[in-house]
Length: 324
Ligand code: KG4
Ligand code: ZN
Image (cartoon, rainbow, N blue to C red; front, side):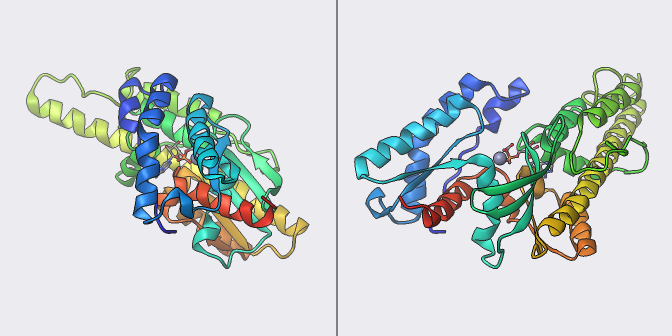
């Protein structure tokens, strides 16, 4: 990798409690030219030095995707370059190979992001067998929703804030239901767990959730209430994370087993997507990998959450195997 640039718009959306499509489109348009310029100049190259341009075509917010695709088209036209269209999830799945060239096909890939929970057997570029997917919410989405219920900051992400809060919490204080206990497959479900957390938050913290303090009269009473409330928030965060990751680990263990039945040479489990930045997720999946006789590979945390390098790398992989 010779150069990169990343622009975040979390601060623009944070006051709204979620992504506002029109603001997102405008932020993309405002940042596009300078991000491309920074990436090229940090690599000390110009578009003349390129052999192709890779760009995400989906899935995602089409208003925003369009901004990137239009820029890529314009550059390709101006410099007579081929355009390599990239599927966002394929970029997450392949980026580990940029950092560890010893990862060979076939491998198992668990993709855990804000919009997707996918367990794949990756046979090659563009060749995937889906072993499992989410029946409702993705894990990142569940992290974000629970973070909001608990009144945690949503920047840089609800998931990162919940992970931090859980560090101070007791994961066994509240017993939450393990999803899909009786279904012997590799699918995931987080909607029921999220509802259980919502009810718990209402019971423990009141309908307003984790934000705000208690309403004791004396200052010391107020401090004690605030402290107890913060501890309850941390305990709920830790209890949610404990069950959510247990579910993830169980399904992944079965997925590796299924993958080995189909492709006995599988020796690697790649975990990618924004949630793969989470240390508890990594630890639990390391145990799954050890018990299943495969090695675990996670891209560096910075390349687990959305970034341009993963799209460029997927472009390199596609460019190498397709005649442009
Ligand atoms: O892959 P990504 O950057 O964007 C999508 O394609 O969705 O993933 C974003 C998701 C968000 O739901 C965010 O809360 C979650 O990844 N996330 C985390 C952590 N960092 C980001 N979830 C748990 N722990 C983290 N440390
Ligand atoms: Zn993503």
